[in-house]
Image 1 (cartoon, helix red, strand yellow):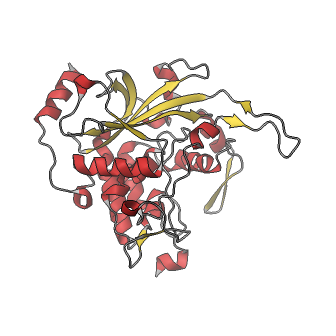
Image 2 (cartoon, helix red, strand yellow):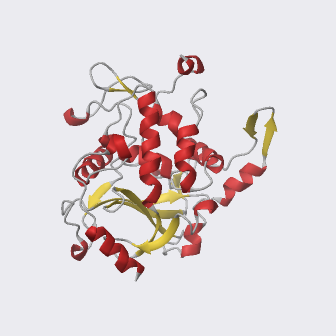
Image 3 (cartoon, helix red, strand yellow):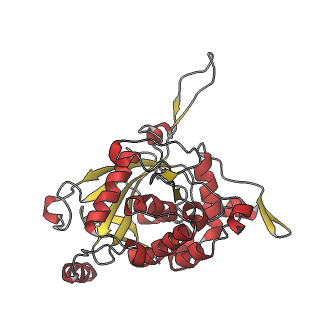
Length: 328
């Protein structure tokens, strides 16, 4: 009955035609497709799919119904973050982690540790994005809020060089990390140098991740389907082991996928627009001119605080100001 009512609600909701990205943090279907094209271009581990033909959404192109990235590695359980937090010591006003979960992806490990502290519930994400201290470059709002465009309309990044095809060459802060990133993450070298042995395949949990467009909330929606080390589908309880506990069964629930019909774990989109609006406002305050084609990179960055140990690709380079620059 709940699924039927959701379908009726979406059917009765008019399709958003006018852009309200800056005003409300939402996307039109056309803006969602443009943002998805940018994600696929910059991160080739992502791709468009059409899904079940009987479940096609008329407000989206038939060949671009949703985005997917498959077999994304997840080496650690979220419980390892709790163990790391127990080893933290407080020194004055500063917190120092004395132990962090091991990972061959340092950026993922750092994001995971930060995520354990930053958010209590998805309902608090908008407040966290707004209140994140900009002076030391910490927090989501500080990271994405300092994106800026140069005089030529190109996005300034830490490296300062422009790359990409003609239609995308103005987004220097969204550097491609390569198609092989997800596959390489599951392989550990058996040795180094000329005497190194053959690589050893590490068994790890993996996830298929999809992003759909929610017509009612007018935002993207994030979905997860997990596999065990042996390639068998994870149970709901096993999936919840890879989600921050405060979100489980509150903002992350099990629902049928709108394009596949199979139950997936999903982050409910009711607060997504509020969070994105806070982030967009922070970017504007930092002198940047946020664009809709950057939306999914920012979206995936804040969703990472919900699933910090799932190592999906959402490459984004940002230039953070020094404390003196931020004060000025």
